[in-house]
Image 1 (cartoon, rainbow, N blue to C red):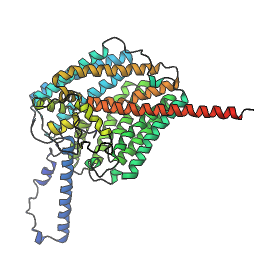
Image 2 (cartoon, rainbow, N blue to C red):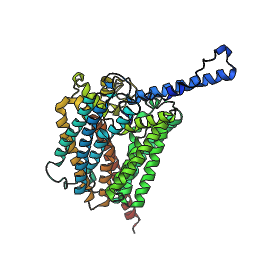
Image 3 (cartoon, rainbow, N blue to C red):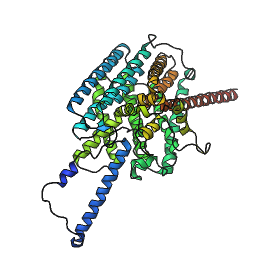
Image 4 (tube, helix red, strand yellow):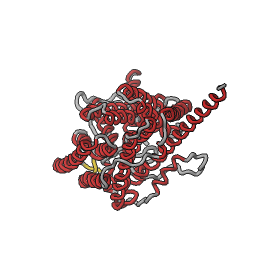
Length: 516
């Protein structure tokens, strides 16, 4: 699924082009039969450029779901003032809880979940305000926006209560797959994971070439022109492989080498896949998370690093769409991409608006999301469209056609699956899940064996992408990715463990045979 999902992508909202065409010397156009050859060629080039601009704008509207239509309106200053007060109160409450948690325990996966949640539901409000008042983009009606902000806070408070219930999250028995890893087995596990990712990337490039230079539009990366789409799911195993390598030899130098290796891999996948930034963004996020957890970074470094990362992701998005246009329009696109990459919060407001006509899906989306992992050769009748909650939201709520899937957010996904009654259940499940991750991470930190410590910590940090998916897309998308990540990581660890033990046995046999 595209990582840049959102709601209001009105890329034609500014009137820069209109201003350029108005005023000045308003002359009648020269009839075609009176134009010179140079004038006709220039007009043909202008028409081609205009058509390219329209295609690009149409692709952005389809990608981020933004058009003036049902449920979208202008916003008055009074409405904005009320929303601003609600946003400030909700944001300050969340930040206060996060600071208190960090002061008490330092780095935790609860902090990571909270930061992802804050970015998803609250960081987009200032950018939406810029789009509304500077570029006159339409927006969902204010009552639904206020409801989205307040409901997001209520869900987080319920999650926080579920996470903190029962006292400290420290101290449970070590996981079965992490017991008994010596350093050699940990190195073998890292090698297996990295080789899986590199082999999948090599096979994908061999079948498709470098798509960034071959395809004209980003939406074509999800079309039938691209073969071996399933290979992309294995790219993510490179990151936990490099995490194991880092945790075996932790230090500032290893941390910087981790950044170089993972950012390089992510940049190459960006070129190979045709503009998908997920692997590169995850490499940078893991670099920051590991630095914070290991003491290489101070919390005061996070704002400038976040600003740098957001700017870089926005520039990559602009490069991906190859958008022409004046500087003001480029700024509009950059703000739009930044908002929809970080915070598809307006999607929750749209869900609330359409809630009366949403058909409850129950647990079926969780089952359906596993369909993508079943090869068509094993299931020839597999549906082309997997109706999980992101696809249900895109098709049935937004009314979008095929070719793009828009993130509904965690709360919208719960509403689609079970209505309002699903929200407390979802908050409880999220609290218990993140509490389990923190217990697992604490167990790894206290492990005596460096191999076990490295493997389990790498598994935990490698799951940060799944936690981001949980917040942005919902529990159904999370469950299938968690199962895929866990199965791939576990099988790789078992294979590495078995091969290491086999090699040791072979070495012992040879030693006894060579002995006099």
